[in-house]
Image (cartoon, rainbow, N blue to C red):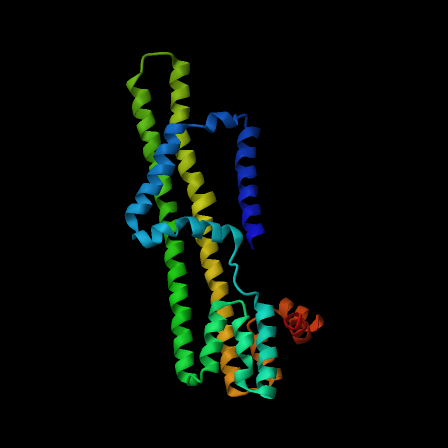
Length: 270
């Protein structure tokens, strides 16, 4: 996922700047420190003023998260791990899964499995994990909203920068016409910054964070279903069918073709 995000940003930059150059523009003419200060620093300030400190502090990590992708559990691999655990639990009991739970590599799955091993009632277990899922989704939505708000501030501040530049230019009317034209062009660079930052950087990051949160919710719901199935003592084949319902068709086929549980069991044995 991270590769597609970076590739998309690069393609957008090439399209915008390449089109400008083809039209006869010069990249150096887009470099304008006052416009940068008004738009970028102004947008940052307006965003900081709009959200509590906890969300403001998350801006750098959220941006990196959007660039890199979710970084959570791979759904197909997690499904196979849970199927393997279901088989092991039927043969050796729930307590035999404690080491597997410690090494599962996903905090949400670890929490659910440990609650199950500790003998938590199924209804209580389901309630706890559903609250955890809803809370995580809400937190990710708030982080995405920070970038969405910034994408609203940036174009407006771009227009503000253009107006401020035009005020300066119009204040010097009567001078050299060429200098006047250059000043007007520079003034509109701020608008370029505002629209560009909003639509190429901030809004895509907000949408990517929402997409990541949606994918992670599906994986966590799958984990919840798997934990409840293991606790209920379901047949591993039934568990597999349930969990594969959460996977895209191509992932289901890939896992079946590659040997599924045997692959995961071999990794754990190693």
